Image 1 (cartoon, rainbow, N blue to C red):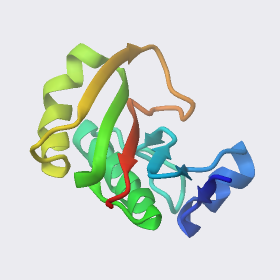
Image 2: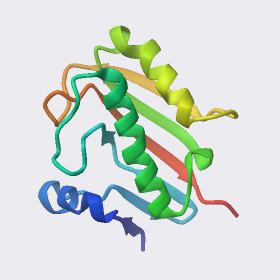
Image 3: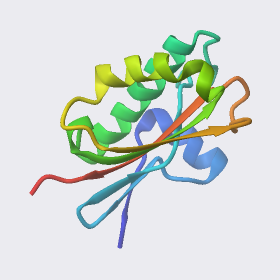
Image 4: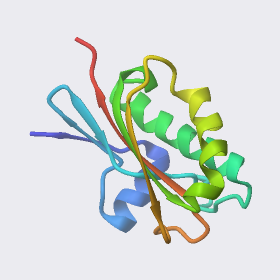
Length: 130
């Protein structure tokens, strides 16, 4: 059976929205999409850089709880409101967290996210080290 990963700071998401932030399935850690919300009050910054960093920090929390790191990520899918407007800024922030060798990545432009004001959602799959 798959193990659910729910960092204490994200328990409200599990309770309110009925999803696990991540699931360990054998050697794979499958993370749900993470938005750049402030985990203490659920707000998002109007500043794209701040929001992107918060999303990666939130994702880092999930990965750590699952026993992996950004170095173990094999695939990333990102969903962007205003993809063309923010992609270069997003890449600059992403590269502070995701280092070579880079994982597979798909970026998708969308019209809105579940959290009002959210402009990026990041979903990853990582492989637990042998």
